[in-house]
Length: 111
Image (cartoon, rainbow, N blue to C red):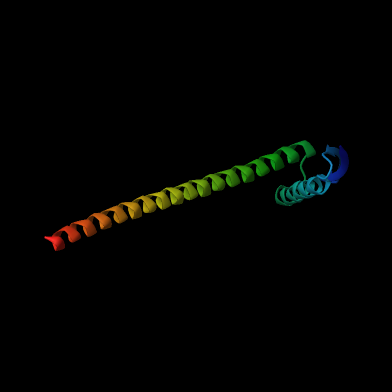
């Protein structure tokens, strides 16, 4: 277990994380701090607890949008996969029909 000191809104926090996750955790903290600074610039100075709640809500909104976009992409991918399956089924049906037509043509030619 590692320990990382991160700074959010000019406050240092010691956070435990798995070994090898230190850089990732620092990057996340920098993102949260950046969002804090953006929010403070937009609404002015507010209490730390209120600021962090507002930032948490903003980040939750971003995450919600990302999940929605991911679901849209998954649905589109599933639709494309179904379309590809339908195309393959149609192709196989056309092959079967072509062979039947060839057999009929051979029968007609032999007669």
